[in-house]
Each structure stands twice: as structure tokens, then as C-alpha cells.
Amino acid sequence: MDLILTGGSVFRGLAGGMAEAVAVSGGKVAAVGTNAEIEALAGADTKRVALDGRLAIPAFNEAHMHLLPFGLGLSMVNLRAEEVRTLDEVRTRLRAAADKTPKGEWVLGRGYDHAALDINRHPTVAELDAAVPDHPVFITRTCGHMGVANTAALRAAGINHNTHDPEGGVIERRDGALTGLIQERALSLIKAAVPSPDTGRMVDAIEASGRHLAAMGFASATDMNVGMTANLAEVAAFARAVEEGRCLQRMWQVLAGNPEGIADDAWEAGMRPWKPGDDPDAMLRWGAVKVFADGSAGGLTAAFFDPYLIGNTTGVFTFPTETIHALLAKYHQQGWQLDIHAIGDAAIEQVLVGMEQAGATPDRRHRIEHCGFLTRDQRRRMLASGILPVPQPIFLYEFGDLYLRNLGLPRTAGAYPMKTWLSEGHHPSASSDAPVSTPDPFLNLLTMVTRQTNQGTVFGPEERLSIQEALHCYTWCGAYSTFAENQRGTLEVGMDADIAVMSRDLTQIAPEEYPDVQAHLTLRGGVPIFDRNGELG
Image (tube, rainbow, N blue to C red; front, side, top):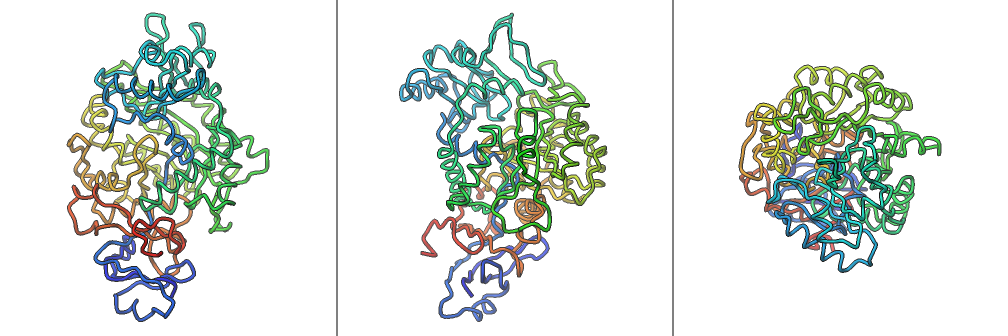
């Protein structure tokens, strides 16, 4: 044996239950059992990890995040609500960044939540101008679907009073004047003006994201919407990161498929979708295409049948139905898994009909990303066609109280129905959508088990999961959504030795203690990609 982990709890998976110890050989799980059984397999050269009552689990699988943007965002101005609650603090942080930036270069901020600011609204172009007049400034809301530009940024993007709203996008005006708020597909105007990062910086960002994830117990991840930062150059950056050993997670890669994306260019360049039977050990598996159907429930742009309680709106459809259905049919025919963003029930219906018409079947495992507010009939039809929900329970923790304000109690209580999905057989894969929300898995586990927001409100307690069910959603379900359930997601004999060791046994502590838990050790194929305490040298 190469390695044994003994003296604690081992979560084999929801079906396999618990064990005391696990053995690793050749990058695979070689045995799982009692301490005595595993100790008997050790040889003179076997490395050992004494769990000392800690919990070992199949390493977490981050089923929906933006890995490259997350890494790039680590160098942006942090405006997340955990630290920034006032307009003054937004401006102070932007001003400090501008002081370190050559005049005329962009200052970018990430993660503000207008509902968490003291002004209870988005900042305005004038307020950003007052803080930073000599640099183009753009700050992105936490959802990633909108943001605010100052005058210099609007000018650089070619946006003025005569600029028309693009299809599926909004350039907000109030009393005929630009407010600086740019929403949905109109963001492409800002993107085109911001200089793209070079390959070296992107590889650095991939590695930085990977180290951040590994330190939380992740050995697999999905990068959604590849190509929206630097077009096809992102594909080359990931290839270089793998070649240099700087891509730490096993990646399921999802190409941006909107007209602004790179899926068509990638196809013309010869890229073809990974399919079952291809190399299961490939670090990069380019398997899916993403299309946006709507926006954000917190930002009032997710598309609903019934209107929001404020704003006199039912949200924004990113594309007319005929257009998005044509996109879905094209990518389905090409063989891609469809990973389609839809949050509101009206957008989910638009996407679901398009997938059904395209010929969705369980073997294709098409996915509706987020899938936050859906009907019973939509759940039934998704199950019949094998269409998977890929939710972010953490949204309820971070934004649940805002959902209540925007949508009311019934819709909020029924949002992200993890228990219902699991009991009906949908295989919901928990994820974070980072950098939209924190990738911290312990807060996500807390949300799944308690249904409690960061303000202490509980929504839909009937949708609570057990900790074992929550771990299942964060491990096996993520593997299933990427056709990898026969390689990883459980700690059974023959599976990849992708293992995370927690600082405490999550199955034996109260949920309110989850946020204090850390990952002590993360293995990918039996090799440490993170070792907090130097247990394996």
C-alpha cells in the first residue's frame, strides 16, 4: 500500500455509509474497512495519516464555478458584502486601488451587493466619478450579471446617451441620463473595452484558484463559460497550466456558447466534446456548452411568469425563444452537454422546452444551471429526460433575505429544493458559482442542512438535508453531472483516491459548528495537492 488513513471516520458515500480507515495504492482506493483490516495491509514503505477522530470524505467537486475569473478576481478590488456595507467603503477601496494604478488604466471591483449597502441601491456613475475621476472604473455586482461604470469607463466602452440597449441587455437611464448601471448582454460592451489578460496572467489565475480550492478540500471543479474573459486564449491558458502542473483540479470545461462566446470558433478549430469512453483521467475534459437564458433573482433580471414584488418587472430573457432554441438544438446535435443558465421559472420553461425539442435523453445528462425557482411539472419533465439541476444552495444563505423582498415568501421558501430533488432522483450537484458566492463548502453544507440565511432566517425547512445527503450532493452528484461517477465521488475500491480530510468529523458536530471546520489534507489520485499540517511531508 502507498498510503493508509486510519483511526477516524471515512464517509464512503451515501450508499456505502461509514468506515474507520481507507488504503490507497496506485492512485486508487485499494481497501476500505476497519482499522485492523487496513493496518494489516500496510508495508514497510506505506505512508500513514492518523485521522485521530477526523473525517475523510471523497474530495469535494465544485460543479459550477468560474475558476479563471475567480483567480483573476483575487487581484481586483474586493467589494463583497462580508467586508463592504457602505458606499463610503466602496469609494475608499476604489480610490486606494486607483492610487496604485497608472493614470488611465482600468480599476475593476468585484462582488458588491446593492441590497447590502447602506444606500440600498446600486452606486451611480456620479458617485464613482467623485471617487475615481481619472481612471475607467467598473464594479461588478456579486451575481456577475450587472455592474456600474464611471464616466471614463462608459466613454472607453463607447456607451453614450444614444447607445441602444442590445438584445437581452440593459443600459439603465433615469430621467434620460445614464446611471452607469449595465445589465446582462450589455456587459459585452464593457468587456470589449477592458484589456484581456495575457496567457501568463491567466495561468497564474488558474493556479491561484486551484490552490484556493484545494485548501478547502476540492479535487475536481467545473469552469463555466470558458472564453468570456479572453476568448480562445483561455483554452490555451488551461492547456499550459496542465502542462506546467499548475492546474490542481480535474476540470470539466464548459465553453461559452452565446454569440459573444467561443463555442463556434472552438468547433471550427477542431475541438470536439469529451464523451464517455474517452480518457477518464484527462485533467481537462471539454464536454459542454453554456448559454444564458436569464439573469439574477437578486438583481431582478431572472425571468419569472409572475412579476417581482418590486420594480414592476418579470425579469429579462437573454434571447428570444426562437433564438435560444436554435442554439440549444445546434449544440445538442454537435454532441455537447448543454449546461444552460436559467433561474426563474419562465426561463427554466424556455430552456426545458428547447432541450426537449432538441432530443434530450438521460444518457446526454443535459443540465440546467442554478434552476432555482421551478414548478412541479418542470421537475417531472426534467426527470423524464434526465436533465440535471445544478444548484447553488449557498445562494439561499447569501441572498435569501433579498429573495424574500424581491419575490415573497412562497417562492423563496421553495427555492433550490434540495430534499425534493434528491428524493425524486434528480442528483442535484451542490456548487457555489464562485466568485458570485463564496466557494467555502462548509457554509454550503450549513445551508443544505439548516436552510438558514446569513441573517438567521429559515426558508423551507422541509428541504433540509442530513449531513450525509449534503456531502453526497457535493461529491457523487457533482461527479455524476460530469460523467465521472465511476471514477470519483465515493471512496469505494477502485475509485480515484481523491480524498479530503476534515479537521473535525462533520457527522458528529452541530451544524452551527460547520463554518469552523477546515480541510487539513486534500489528495488527488493519492497525491497531496494541499497539506495544511505537513502530514505527508
